[in-house]
Length: 147
Image 1: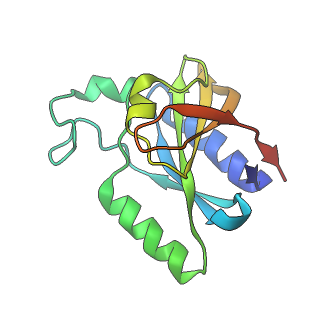
Image 2: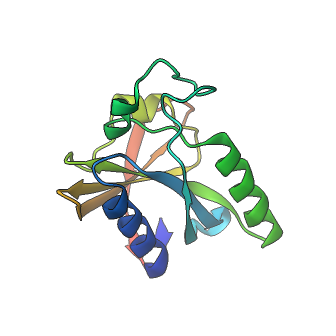
């Protein structure tokens, strides 16, 4: 996966600002080129009414995320209007390694890149990218090239 320097900086800044909660967003660019040009912020919808996991309390935003569906649709429309598409998704792991969890893999879609940024005490310290060949995982690690 290739990611534009500004997009990576935006992901890391979002992770730092959202600490100690998990943040999430959408990676926009060109799927055919496996290139991310932009990172678009989304709200973490976990535990809210209408969520896939409404019974998870607000405290679970520290170790779970669900992309807000309205944000997802808006970002997809904006990307299409600009001649771009969704390449993947990102989220942070506060005070936890940039390693995909079983929850992350189980809720993945095949063909998309999943970027995880580890944030320790409010500072981004690591990042890793994963893809799933099948919906629901398992994940495999992919290299990140910042361009």
